Length: 191
Image (cartoon, rainbow, N blue to C red):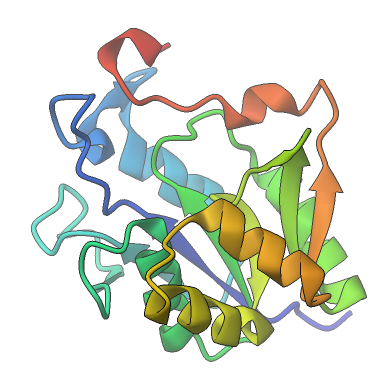
């Protein structure tokens, strides 16, 4: 069986304002979030793993290429753009730093769907999308650029546009999968 061709990026570039400290270094079950999330991505077996974040983040000495946003202050969409620009593979797995419940087997299911359908696959919970634990085809690069150049940095709007164009396949979440998307934004969210 041929190896699936995809890279992965950990989005760790947020300001962590509500947390009061860099989320990447926050401990969850005794392990820094950045290590936990990198382990999840590495378990998928991507060709390359990147980190979209600060050069001086707690992960700086890990030996993983750190990607800088091409345009600053664009939020996660800017990080996605930098990673899509960097990858040489047709698919990119994206995982946010603040989703410690995410599992590699769930992301692997999304990778399989993306490759079999030839589209990006983004989880959907009701009317909202979960774009920070998803698989993107490089075919969405044009939509990313369109949004960024138009000043619309909303990931929800980006995904909706991708769905309209037939580039994004929504993956409806089951109630059993909802806990995977519990994020940690403030100290009270830690478990």
